[in-house]
Length: 413
Image (cartoon, rainbow, N blue to C red):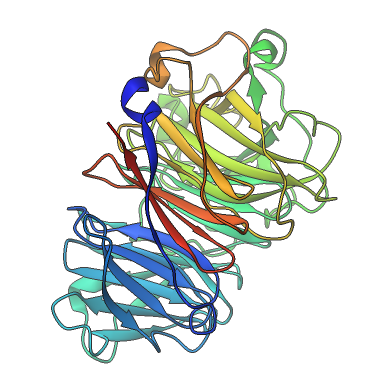
């Protein structure tokens, strides 16, 4: 892995006119790696063959405002979301028209997740809503939908690979985790138990703080005023006896960020390890003078007391970022095997590993939080890089920048 990605170089750059599509906000490969899609600032979606770097199609009016995120449902169907408050479904075999447009959000829609087992589409937006769409009953008029969850300051929402958890990041520095997820239930205010809010721990904190819980901080996105009484009220007696949490239990965390212990931060980007072992966060300070990439390991196991479990995330690795392009969200990602991270860094990207050998995370968990290792730095843009993505099938990485350029990187022997 180290030798392979250590030999990676800029292979091709796709020069695109900023007069038509603007900045590149998101990149997404199809599951078979045959198509690379590009979400653009000025209403467009671009499609490329990533192997030949040839342009396939431009969806010039995919939306009426910025396109924020793209998600493939399978090798032919994909969904896009936009600041125009809608989600659109597309079929690669018939790109001249949308399959359908989904209406339900009241503000900018920022990301899309998909449960392949139930075929439920999950979206989140700046209206604070997480909405579930049943694609099993999709027609040209849309899909049946329901509001699943609501919270203030919502930035990003992700599902773990097995869809057992939902993670939600907020601009107020909180990370919300819904455990033992059941997407068939709508979680209205007061209908779900809240596990006690607390700060995440680093390895060095475990011996001193594993049994303590931090107080709720002002600005918390929780709806309840008394988390303990709410938990006890809604938790079944059976689950209390068994020492396990009920379905859709909500945990509210304040992730520890190096250098930010006494300062607020905004969690701008949120990703999950492909094997579900960890979560990857990009955090910026409230004053925008520092930016960090952090990895947090999931700590599994039944809590000693159901109403006050140990913190389920632990900071294991971190690195300070360049903090160039303040105010713009930088979307980072794991490699398909989870051994590496590709992170926007100024006018390029950095490939990061848990150690210099690109070992698996579980094989190099430190006793104390440790810096991520820089495997390779790649610079091929003339503007701030906003997004990067690994190909799921080939040794290739794509990146997109503020001025609209897309660069591809692959090994050069």
